Length: 134
Image 1 (cartoon, rainbow, N blue to C red):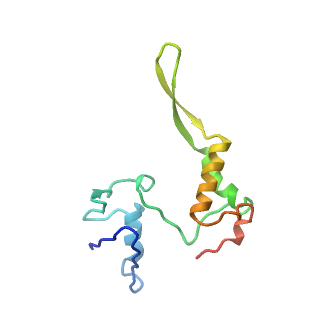
Image 2 (image 1 turned 90 degrees about the vertical axis):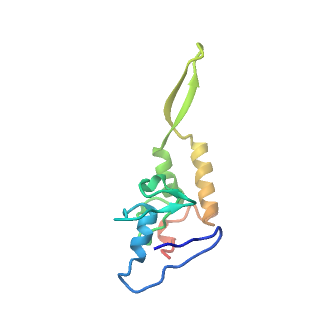
Image 3 (image 1 turned 135 degrees about the vertical axis):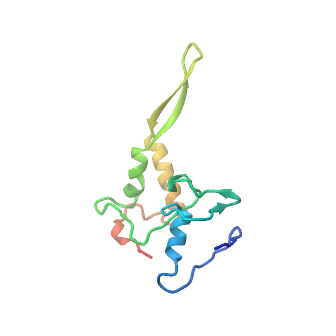
């Protein structure tokens, strides 16, 4: 299969059950590996990149959220665990890198940015049970 999607363009995979729509999307996202061929994105071969390294996002119909956390805390959960490399220079001028957790302010900024992207600003304190699955 070959297709081209222009910037800002939306496409649809339409076909009967079992024809490969979901498999194609899973391969693009990196959850399945093609048995032949390549997956090119902007001319770059991403076939062997793991899902978390691909410049592709996936929204699952059946997502796993913590029902006892509100929307904000569900978004913040992974950010609270994440460690990022920070480079320091000591008095002798030597540099070293250490992993450290994001600050509360950094987490808050990232959560609010994510809420803005999906147009959920003002809903962060609501229960995740109020979110639509579609």
